[in-house]
Amino acid sequence: MFRVKICGVTTVEDAILVAEAGADAIGFNFYPRSPRFISPAAARRIAESIPGGLLRVGVLVNPSEQDAIDLVASAALDAVQLHGDEPPELAARLSRNLPVIKVFRVASAGILPVVAYLDQFRQSGGVMGAVLFDAYHPSQFGGMGKTADWAAIRRYPTEPWHPPFILAGGLTAENVAAAIQAVSPAGVDVASGVERSPGRKDPERVIEFVRAAKLAFESGNFQDRS
Image 1 (cartoon, rainbow, N blue to C red):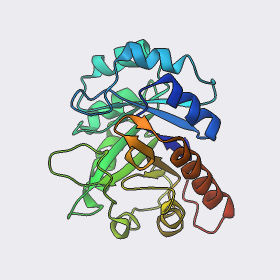
Image 2: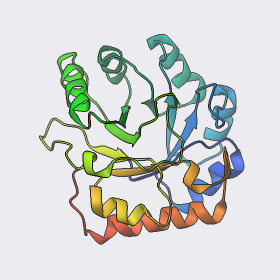
Image 3: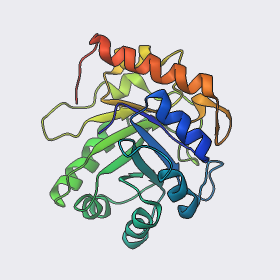
Image 4: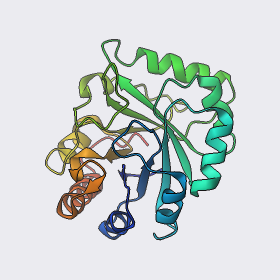
């Protein structure tokens, strides 16, 4: 789906920066309690300012099916990233019409709840674009700058029907290459690790992150599980 995504973009200036840095995808956060929240109208203005090759992903938390469909249309999105406690049946219905990324915050139970969720999703007739692993927090839905549990994520199964996974959580230009080598994700996703303040990107950090991630992927010194 993508290899490098910069999430939590809130301005046209930052969107152009992300595109020029060479990222593959850009994320818009529609969760009202997030410091990176953006309205659908603002996201559409930003989406229309960047090259068509950049995947536009909407971050949603516990939306209804209709709300998700309406948001995709109003914000000109290419995919949705479900960051809440969405049931597999809802995710499966949405996946029949657009790419879906389901986020899992890896906690003490490890990877087992993820495998169970994906099995239910598959039985519901869905086709998952990718899963995304983030750090666990009991009351927050990501964007915390906390490193995910790499050891648990390495136990993610590799059967052909399991979707590729994206790694998030505490990634920076300084550790993203090590993360790729250690965990072998299909892609990486960053928000706070390239910011100067919530919702505002730091140009140098964005450029360095994209460069480091792409060099790590291109080195081939990891197991490509995509």
